[in-house]
Image 1 (cartoon, one colour):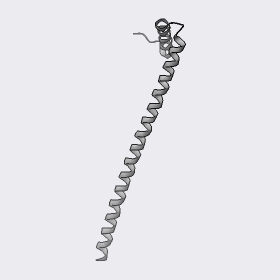
Image 2 (cartoon, rainbow, N blue to C red):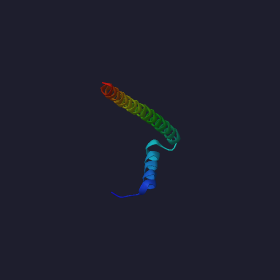
Image 3 (tube, helix red, strand yellow):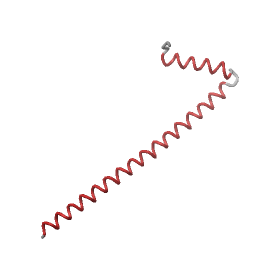
Length: 83
């Protein structure tokens, strides 16, 4: 096709929206779209937050298990030295 750049694409979308929705209902439609985009962004942030929490919990669990295994190895090596 042809390349218009970002502003050209936005202009084409605006013209199509104006023709499809009509000038009377366009502010209402844009308001609804804006609210929908806001809700989607909020949902995305919540999902990312929960995902990051899960990753941190898994990392903590992994670190804890590695510390416990190192502690057990340390205790077993101390027990062997005292014998």
